[in-house]
Amino acid sequence: MISKSDISLITSLAHKKYRDELGLFVVEGPKMVEEVQLSGYTIHKLFTDAELTPAEMKKISGFKTPSSALAVVRQPKHQLNIADMSGDLLLALDGVQDPGNLGTIIRLADWFGIRHIVCSQTSADCYNSKVVQATMGAIFRVKIYYYTSLADFCEQMAGKIPIYGTALDGDNIYEKPLITPSILVMGSEGSGISPEVAAWLSNKLYIPSYPAENRGSESLNVAVSTAIVCAEFRRKI
Image 1 (spheres, rainbow, N blue to C red):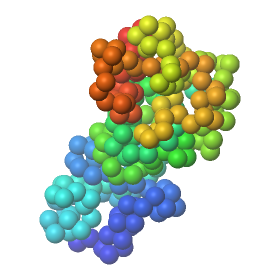
Image 2: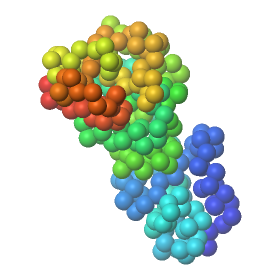
Image 3: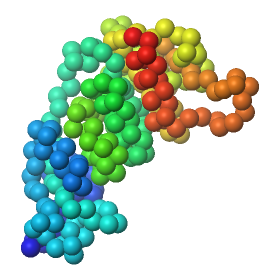
Image 4: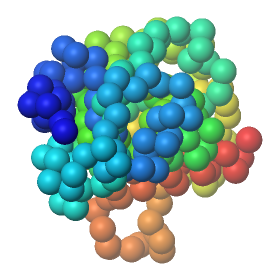
């Protein structure tokens, strides 16, 4: 039997305000719950279909078809240490607002061995349930930080390591030398990298269409672009 207070807690975590206040987030699905258990994250409460009826699981599930396991998990308190930021390739996200895109980028970071992502405050919340599900467990292996001003962060890092960013007026990524340690900035879905952050880029990269005169899509999805650029970085180093 699930209590009304537990139902209230879980449903409240659909809102960022309460996730922030309580320092909790929801993970759903047996595979994702297993990822939590392997990660070292602290599970605040765990609910499974071995203890709850299908009707009770439906009350707390965010899925159309309720899963067999749901966990309320404590948010980790990652401390942003500039010294940790300069060891390899680091992602910086400037206003990536779509939860699916953010979740996919976190999953890509995990795939390409990127252990730190710095997000602007205008980026989606990484503990949004849609983001968490889209990461497919990668959120438990990649440290994510929210910086008050991404431009200030880039200013601190400028001169220490190269700062790359994607731009329509950038150099062809397939012809440009790429080095690490470095920072890769990816911009928002609608307007790209903000002028305040772009001012600190030391290298602008462009992913050319094929063939060059192709008059197809105007731009690539930010998660797709991230995958291409990360793959090229890993290929060249």
